[in-house]
Image (cartoon, rainbow, N blue to C red):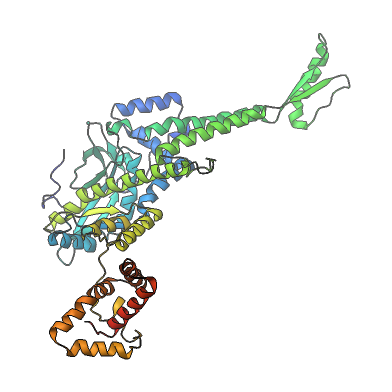
Length: 499
């Protein structure tokens, strides 16, 4: 059903999917309970055309579902895309990552393809056609990424096939296998059921149907009872009065009033206000279930009182972050295997395909990570070089260690602007003695000041230097003596008395 997508002979350079000129007719406007059950039964028999057409109508015509799906997509697309080497210690994998960043993911249709692939979070599957073209430098580049409309997906033979289209974009009666050498196939959900059962979107269909049907039912109710209705009263057996009242009530809508005798009695009855509340509550309940399926929570769709310090908002936020993280992982895995790895293979680029990562941490999580790194550093703990890649994945951009400058002045200060303190005669004499005395004396002085020198050289800022020196002297001297020694140590260092 599919060929090896990594063979260099499988290089799709021609386009098969044409833009559909005439969409299949909408079915949502005529659907009823019986027809909806028939559509689902037909899909289970591998005829998914009517079901996928209904999915299209639902998403296009329902503002709530469209908005919630848009939030799900933007949570991934709005994050920074990062490409990380498969093996952080391999120069070959690093070079491959640079090639991918430079040549492969610069396609102008890449973002549109990503947005279409993310339809796979609700649809059972989402497909994008890929075309390559040879560039002037000899490498194959991505020429185009074409979203395949869901109406072209065919399961009549039991597996995924793509319906053929002619040059004008009209659907033919033939189909071809969805070969992974030509198509990116993405399933962005965790269901293990067959695609023709409808995917996660199937559970939305009945809620959509009831919400929209209740809207029409409520409109008919209001048309009949919403403006109130008239109740005429007459004496029992007085048929003449009954006929007069019936005639008057018939003309009441046209005339805007009633003309009756003094003896006749007419009451106006209004529908109960609670009926409107029941309709609103049903609408809210239905939309809440739809939001829960798409986003995993409801607070981002409606304002709900949760009480002070209840923690409900944090729990909802955690659920949404889990879903966003899953979307990024699944999408990155699909892009890596179905596009990046194939592109490297047909261009004979050595190394493993890099990891495609969408930054998945919120601003609060990034801030917490920065605080943690700072606290570790101040506690004398440094991260390994391998951890830099993990930090880069969290931030959404690569990071590296700051380069140490070969500057004789502390804290990387510019010698032109660094202010050297005045040196007392006693210290100058000590400096002269240290340089002119025997090697044994000089070595003794350097050993005595070695801890101060190390602290000053390792400190990244003046504040950090003072904190570390104070901590060093805290257990040895009184505060006044420690302050004097700190001043002398910094002065000696600035004067380069102890190199």
